[in-house]
Image (cartoon, rainbow, N blue to C red):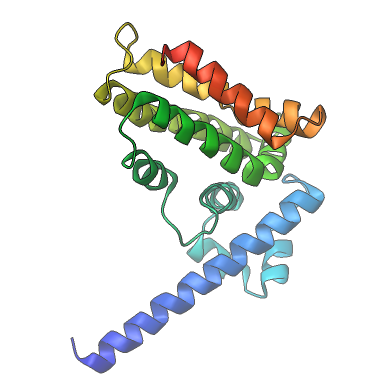
Length: 210
């Protein structure tokens, strides 16, 4: 491949990524403002200033858009590392089980704050829309798989002597669930610090970490 061809390919890739980002941002704004069910692909296309076919080619159908918005919110920016990569990078710097718990507590505060609005959209839509329900179920399963990585990290550092990785992952999943954040922080006005300390204390006790 010549330098000129490589440059053209790089420019096309950059343009495609930028277009996708604009589409995801537009979808997020409309989903949060008007809900998932009532937001149309045509409305998202108009907001992003692209054709409907560009949306289908770049991201996919409306459920795929919802999933892409959640990805972008969870990682902080769409073009950053994926959630498992972010978690792995943070856990790698720890040496003791309590430090892994601190990473998890910080992560739950951070990611739940970023994704709270879009999770509200997903929960509301899942009750009446099969596509949104599939996104919700898939992400619940995905989070559970991700927390097995955290459980493995705890075991490597000497914790979980009486608990399986699957049980530990389920505990982490439950304690850090977005719905708990929404109820405590959004609905009951807990401070971020209060939420983070509850998560940390509960994880330490549930996982038997000293």
